[in-house]
Length: 341
Image (cartoon, rainbow, N blue to C red; front, side):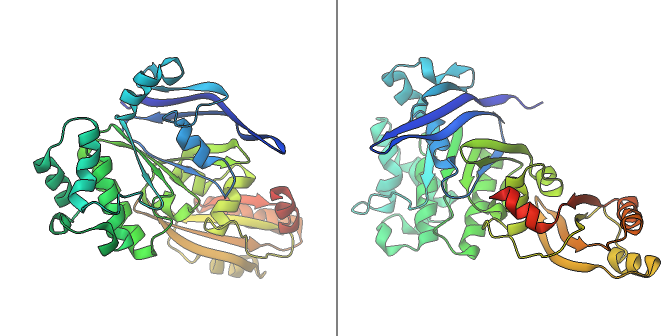
């Protein structure tokens, strides 16, 4: 049975600027369980990077608290917080390596700060991330993917229980992103480290996370299992990410009577849409379609425009549901896009 490791309790964060106050986070509450790979996703400016910095109190909330393994961060002194942060490592978009130090010295750096340097352990970590042969190289001699692997090895140096990844793959190409995500998945499995991934990319969440929270304008718009959120998004923010593949741009879909259907491995393998057209002798428009892999499960989705006739439309919707497909009725895409803005 899973147990709660991180509790975010009604966290709000307001920044004071010359122009006035800016509410970056508004009453955020989340529960992250031990062993999760938990995604926090949102578009630029949604507040997700502020949230990840609140998880270890690098940014102190204006209101609310974060509880890690039963310990309130809000009740800790600065000295206690510094000690607590050895349990919570971070990796970043731009790696943040020491450019004048070798790869080995970069991994040793947090051990030295903790007054426990261990060259053998550092070499074992480099071997784990596939860079044992680069120990004497400098970061500038490495590719972006290799530099991120060094950053991951460094993050593991003090045996953290939690790894926070703030847009850790945003600077990488798709192939390298996949390799880094596979490495994080392996670390989660072999070390039992709970991983929190901050990203604006739905594909990253689908590749590695088991649970996800969608942040929109400083609030939690939706939270749940990744497969469920993809199959049946309940919020406009979630729908935007699902339909846009995470870039926030929804393909133009003019017209009314739109439905979104989701295919999974458990769905019928018959050509459902073609058979439906034949059965009801009425065409439908395929407005949008794509396929994805979510946690090893094949997923596909389509947005269809159904006929104007309400009775026929309802029969088609029931036909799709009878074939074990997830079916969501959308208002006209014009109305839907207005709801997103």
